[in-house]
Length: 286
Image (cartoon, rainbow, N blue to C red):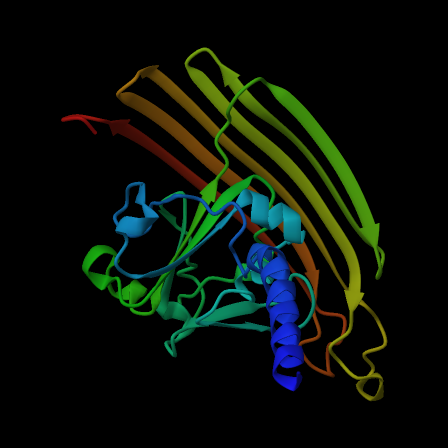
């Protein structure tokens, strides 16, 4: 009798587990929802992810929108193998360390354009000013890639790919507001017209911010941040085997800083313009 009751309990528990298993298996992991199936960082051209031998994480547009990530540091904090260090709130200096290497050992590309800043002492990239508007996917390729990209890629490569216009032309706009007097407004236009495609986006991010300096040192004021970003990707495909693309992104930001007790009201501004053009010709069956 005791054995039959125990068997009944085991059968009931197994039924519960089997009934719950679809929901458990369906819970999305870190980046399991609608993963992109191609990546361009490993070979400088789009290849299926299953053919990439290295350790790679690809984060698509759907995942970015679902998790409501607004800046690049927010995305990279959730990637395994990366250590993100940010000196304060939005807009403050942000560095990424990959697999124990220095911040200047990770090469950052925007549609194939090297965007690391050679004017900084470490020749590294400040990730804090890059907003996620008009971004199609982010590829994080971990491990040495110097044979393809040179000495700047000892730790790995982060490739940021701009959205490509597809389908019926459409215009979208949205706005949001939150704590610390934060507002974010975006307007965009995407689509195709004959052989041409376009993707345009303008974003305005403003926040009153917080202070990194203690009240004892006179840091009662807020350290605000303003970022205006315009992004464009224009493409032309006159034939099935020919494609021309023009990529541009302009970032204009103003940043209040707490550099020391002697100057708690210091501030800075940055103007960044990234431009690139490419031509693609597919031969020998691609």
